Image 1: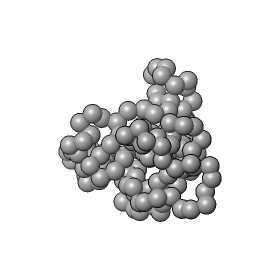
Image 2: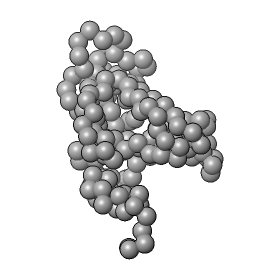
Image 3: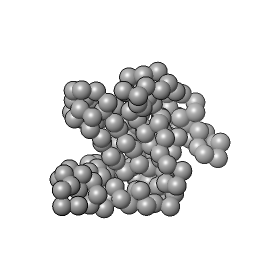
Image 4: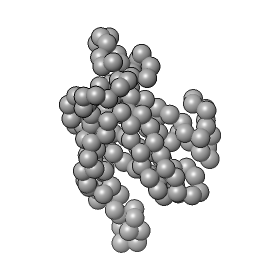
Length: 153
C-alpha cells in the first residue's frame, strides 16, 4: 500500500462510498437508467452507460460517469430512476466531497464533471415537492407510486 496513488487511496478511505458498497440493500447493485451518448440498452466499451442508480437503506444512490475526453454537464430527471417517486423533493449528498448540496426537485444537474470522472450522490426523500410547480409529471409512469396509485399531477 505504500506505493498506492493518492487518488486511489482517497477512494479506499472514503467512508461514504464504502458505506454504499457495504449497504445490505445494494446487494442488487446499481443499474443504468440512461445510457447518455449512446442509444439506451446498447453496449459500447469506449462509452458505457453514463447514468446509474440503485436503492440503499438511506435513500437512492446515483453515479454519473463522464465517459468523454472533456468536462461535461450531466443532467437527468429524478424520476428517470425507478427508485425515485414523483411529487417529492430530495436532499442531495455529494459522496466524494462529503457535502450536503441542497434539495433537488424533479431534476439534477452536475456541471463540469471532469473527463472520465464520476459524480457520486445520495438522494434522500425530503418530503412533498413545493406547491405551485406544474405539471407534476411529464409521463404517466412518473406519477405512479410503487403500489400502482397515481401521485402528483
